[in-house]
Image (cartoon, rainbow, N blue to C red; front, top):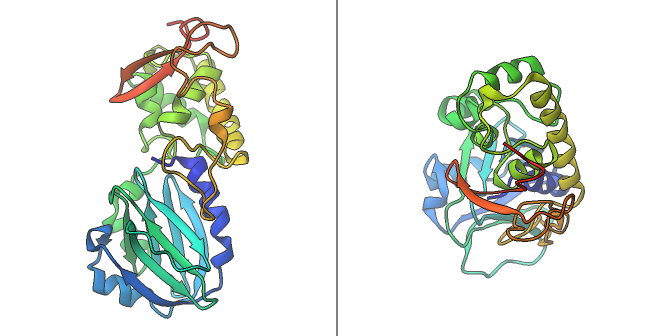
Length: 274
């Protein structure tokens, strides 16, 4: 699933559609529309100018001229592709034609991704609890003391805590593993057992890891591409994720992979002693 760096990369790409008008909406798979129904979705978007494109956690928010919002979540295999050529793939789920003869196409082989159309910010927060309950953005200013307190109050593993979008949002499996490696924290460690210094350092490292991943266009292990169809290349710089039985780039110990918090979790047993 695309995480914060991948979604941020896409949002940056999509600035090219700003101030353009949606002249045609085609829904090819109704289950890709989460709210409202596909007819209301199409009618709501048609003939609207695009005002802003933003990100909230792993969600793409496309604001329209009348304060309505198109929300996109890519899930496991979704891609949001901008092109001047009409896409003919059988995995095309939703297609928006713009006034510059270009297309914004939602391609999703596994058909797990979703789109929502809301008439206002208030309606979005009322109907999409995931966003309403979302925690701090890790790349923006936030009160570290609040986050430290929440983490230290939890008996869950720090890996599970990092994946909890209600505390700090946008972090998924890939970057949780990378963050914990650079912070020298074992993913099994419980939040309640971590010191204020460890957590504060981890939060600083979080910014560094995510910023580096954005610089490299995100990570492409499977389906992810940016909005121009280009793969990310952070996977070439990863220290632990996807490197089971490979040598740690710091100490040469073999990277271990375990199941934790319902996810495959990579770490170095020497650099990240429990």
